[in-house]
Image 1 (cartoon, helix red, strand yellow):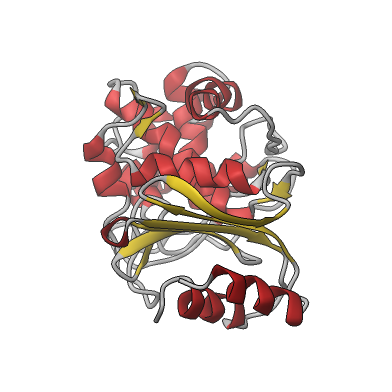
Image 2: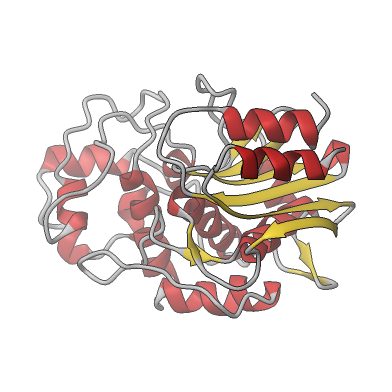
Length: 287
């Protein structure tokens, strides 16, 4: 491992990387840049935080990912749907949302009521399990979890996810109707995202306490739905012999239990290049 060479690549190429951390066997061995001071956008890495909350509620019997989405939504919304839409959404389970395997959703909701927008989306075949990456799927999973818990999901995540991980600085956003927006809009420090990754690396344990069941971690981080990137779990991406937490502008946490490594970096690089990833793989993973 040549962490200094990775940092040199970041500096020499002026890549907009705010900070990075490397852990071996769960212990921090390298850090560079702003890892603990400022909050940075997570974008879709927010989805993995939502997955953790889903897992906690599922472990405690408060939420069943095998039930239909419709069974959790407010009756004033479901009763007003057409018979066709009730039939369609009644066949879509929470698990399907977690695995992004519902075709038909556009990438994001529009307007001032995202739930109405989502529930009026035409889904031609609700039983077809094709990978369709959409913020609407994670938004709906968050809405369903909110209704199942009967409490504000943002507050639940603060109390049940962030506080046990020692994360006391964060921001998150909401939909126009006030639901926790589980698809994006969250901010953490680099170290904060590392703590989420470490929870998964440690099979649901944090600071000597079980936060999440090992069973859920194993399911969430394994391939539940194939895609061209190699596979997807419950809002978690397959990566080589491990998995990763991903945001759209190179917000990353790579969790590699077999190698006993975890690598996190938060960046803002608006292109489709793989230069930063390739440098990490060469200098940190030795590939």
